[in-house]
Image 1 (cartoon, rainbow, N blue to C red):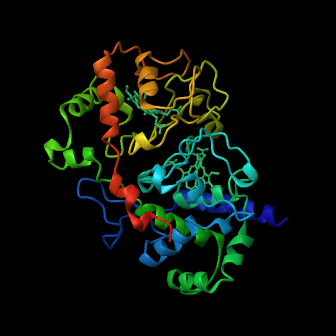
Image 2 (image 1 turned 120 degrees about the horizontal axis):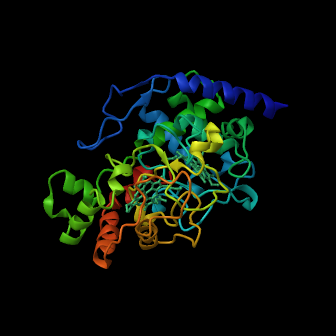
Length: 342
Ligand code: HEC
Ligand code: HEC
C-alpha cells in the first residue's frame, strides 16, 4: 500500500521534474574548468555546500538500502571512475543481478537524460529510481527516516534543509547536488585543449585526429566536451537486441537497439564496455576489443547507424585510437577526497 503511494508520488515527481526549468548557478559552485560549459541546475534544487555535504554522506550510505548492504557508491566507486568495473552487470541487494553495465556519474550534471535508455530526466529522478529499484537498493522512505534518528544526520539535514522537513525527494536532491560537483576536466586531453600542446604524445595526437576524422567517425557521436552527443544510436552490437534500449521508453520500432552515447571520460577505467558489457561475439573487456568492433563495422542490424561501417584501420591506427582514449583519464578526479567517502 505504502509502496503504491510512493510509486504514485514518484510518477508525479517525474512529471513535475520534466517541466522543471534549469538555470545557471548564481555562485561559482561547483568549480568548473574554464574550457567546460557552465553546468545547468534545476530551479527547484539550487546547489549549496550544505546540500552537497549531505548528499556525499548519502551517496556513501549503505544504510540507505533495504538491508544495509548497498550504497550508490557500491556500484559507482570513485576508484573505478564512479562505475563498478570490472563487473559486466551490477549486483544489488541480496546479490540480485541487474541487466546493464553501470555507467559513470562523472559529469552527469551535464546529461539531459539519464540511464542507457534515457528514461530519467534529472539526477534527482535517477537517484530515486536507483533507490527504489528492487535489484539495486530496494529501499523506501523508511530508510531515510531511520537515518534521521542519528544525531549526525539530523545536524547535516538541518544545515541543508533548515525547516527540517524530511522527504525522500529531498534526500535525492542532496544526492543530485553532490553528483553535480563530480566534474572531470583535468585529463591530459583537457590539458591539451587548454593549450598545453605537449600534454599529448605524437601517437596520442594521431589517435585524436583519427578519432575526430571523417574516416573513423568516432567524434560524430562522441563529440563535445564530454565526448558524447547525448543521443541514442545502435552501433550494431547484436543481430537481435534482447535489451531493446531506447525502444523500452518510446515504443518506437526505430529506437530498437539504440542506447545513449556514453561519455568517454575516464573510459580506460570503466571496462567492460557498452550497455550490457558485450557484443554478439564476446565480452568487451578492453578498449582494443571496442576498436576492433568498430573496425569490423559492427553486426548487421536494421537500426545500426550508418556511420558504423567497416574502417580497414591499420594496426598503428587502432593502437593510436586506444592511446587517445587513455588520455581521457583524470587522475585528479579519482584521487580527490572531496568526492570520496566521508
Ligand atoms: C546495484 C548497483 C547500483 C546502485 C546501488 C546504484 N546504481 Fe546507479 N546505475 C547502475 C546501473 C546498472 C545503471 C544503468 C542502468 C540503466 O541504464 O538502465 C545506473 C545508472 C546511473 C546513473 C545514470 C548515468 C547516465 O549517464 O545515464 C546515475 C547518475 C546513477 N546511476 C546514480 C546513482 C545513485 C545516485 C545511486 C544511489 C541512490 C545509484 N546510482 C545506485 C547501478 C547502480
Ligand atoms: C553512431 C554513433 C557512434 C559512433 C560513430 C561511434 N560511437 Fe562509440 N558509442 C556509441 C554508442 C551509442 C555507444 C553505446 C552503445 C551500446 O551500449 O549499445 C558507444 C560506446 C562506445 C564505447 C564504450 C564506452 C562505455 O563506457 O561503455 C567506446 C569505448 C566507444 N564507443 C568508442 C568509439 C570509437 C573509438 C569510435 C570510432 C571508431 C566510436 N565509438 C564511434 C555511439 C557511437
